[in-house]
View 1 (cartoon, rainbow, N blue to C red):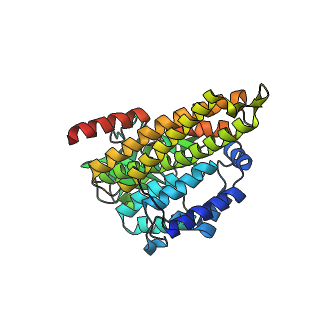
View 2 (view 1 turned 120 degrees about the horizontal axis):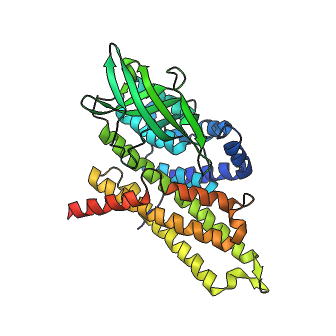
View 3 (view 1 turned 135 degrees about the horizontal axis):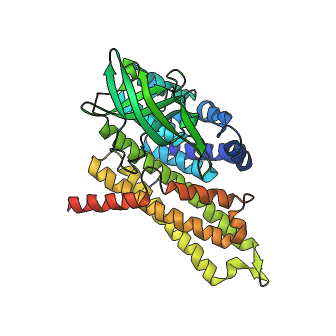
Length: 374
């Protein structure tokens, strides 16, 4: 597949890569994730004000650059290579796409704030009984005079503890709807926690939460197609992020194999270990090709898009597991320590396998879509 970036996209990649290599310190990032606020707000401001990447894939009319899926791929891969914990995928890709498709004054105003770096938006779609099926929505929103009343539970809402706003899926009288919730103004209470890969997530209960009339985004009961697309866009973005992480892990493992000596020679000279690293490389290259296909199919009709995304997610899930485990084994006991970056990357590559649908979920979805297309 001939996939060549434009000059502008290469500048975006190089500029972000330089910023992260000089400004994004892994030790400082882990400290912020483990004992601090969970992220680095100054880095987020740099993304917005110095690099402009928060608006790279958003429309020009709200202050963006007007790019698309390829720009998201470039940015996500660079963030994955640096193991950044800032909520780019959750806020810009998933929430940004939902707000853009919903339209209306509230959504447009919030999109402008996302581009400027002053708003963090997270999607709350998973429920205790839903698992990977986001369409299984028990949370309800009922009309009450001039507004809405929200009742239900959401779990594992990624980046919610950092968010200024939430996008909440709820069942209304005629289908699934999407609601905008201002975390501070609407008084949302949540149970926040740190995930295994040092990200932040939260569970929340809405017990009669009252929302204004304009909290409804888009048409009532018609949100599912946009939510389904947002999930595919998020899955593709985290696949791109995983590719960046796998590139870094493979590079570090090869370098370690050159430096670590056993029996008087580098362990990288042992043929059996060379074969392992070649297998890691092949898994990475298969993932790259699958992500390219998913990126190119994001604007295709829903069935074609879903099949390509599930192929990428299942391919990347398998590769992330293999490369992560092999890298730890080749590093020996040091691979799981806090001192080496490899252990942190391993945790992230493990978590990626379950975001926006698990590897098993996407394998099943791909099989079903392929069967129905024949």
